[in-house]
Every structure is written in C-alpha cells, then in structure tokens.
Amino acid sequence: MLEQQKPIERQVINNPEEYQVWAFFSYKCERCGKEIRAQLARGVEGPRNNPNQAWVPSPFSVACDSCVGFMDHVNWQDDVRLDEFRKPQPGYMFIPDLEHGCGKLVKVAGSSQSLKVFSDDYYTVVARNKQEAIDFYMSQELGYDDEIKESVYEVDPGKKTMLFPVDELPAKYHDEEKYPRKDWCGGYIGVAITLAEAMQYRKEKPPYIICVSSDVV
Image (cartoon, rainbow, N blue to C red; front, side):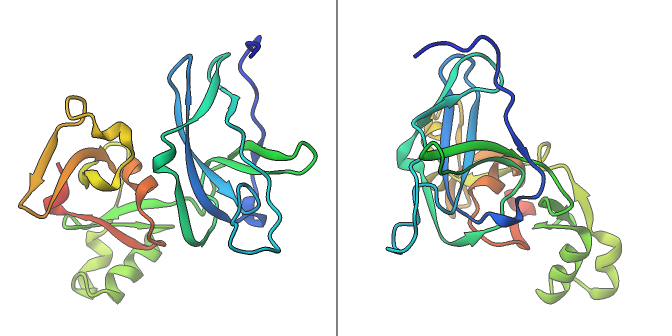
C-alpha cells in the first residue's frame, strides 16, 4: 500500500439527520496508533436481516487523518451491532458510497444535539441538554423535585472516571497491567475509564444513568 504524502482532509457532515446508525467498528492506525470507534450508517455492512436493504462493505483500511499512515479495522470480536437504529453522534461515521461500492469515513460535527453529562453528586446522567436531564431525574424520582433544578450540574466527561465492567469493554482494556481491575463490592470486575469512553460502550438511549457515586473513582 502506498503511503500518503500528507494527512487526509476528511469530509465533515454538519447535518447528519438523514443517516441512521446501526453498528460500531474499531479502527487503529498502524503508524501513529490513533484509534477510533466508528459509527456505521444504515447501508454500510447491513443490516442484513432485511433482504430489501441494499448495503456496501466497510473498507478494511482507511487513510488516517492524523498522520500519513492507514487505520485498519481491528478487534473484530468487539464489533457492535445494535438492536435498533440511533441518531449519529459527533465523531467518525461510515456512510454508503455507492459510486465506489464501499463505506466512506466522514466526521460528524458537534451540534446542540451532542450528548452531555450531568450529575447531582450521586446519580450521573447522560442527556442531550440540562433540561432533559432534569426531566429525567424527576420522572425517575431520583431526588426531590424542588431541589433537583439547583443540584444538577454539567460535568466534563473527559475528566470524570468510573469503574466499567471489564466484560463489556473491547479487548484493548483487558490488559491488566495497563488497566488494573477492581472488584466492585462483588458486583462486577471493573476497570477505570473516563465517562467519555464509557459513553461509547453503553447501548441505552439517552437520557440514562451512566453511573452512581460508588462507581466513580
């Protein structure tokens, strides 16, 4: 495979509403080590349970946009196929490229619909915005209604760390030297990852509880 002369400028999609996500694959650059969790839009690799659904394959290797190397499809055993479609989230996504007969990797821009994280110091909730989070706290009776509006605040998911069940994580987290394991009160064996990482591996639709205070490390 010929090496690129410079990093590729990847197409950015600002209005991804026309797409539906149904799966996730992992890709890693053999040169710089960059690793991404790519969303697969409907029509890339499937779904295959509908004989009327036309689809194109996702490429085994794609140009890296951080260096002049290539990202390969890795950890195939950790590929995720969802039971129902989701809206695209900011990040990377393969969309059908019918002209070339394969998936095309693009970037999904951030928007007001990006998922955010909120906490009241006990429950940590993923939602699209603060009002949705507050409504969820109230509907699930996660606190006193007259206090929730004052107690819920937004947190940075890249700076808050939680214990996540190791058996629900991709193979790269199974390295016990790099990701030490902890027994959470006999409930599960977990490794410490950021909430931003954990959000990639949760299958719930927002809003949802991603962790409670005892999970936070």
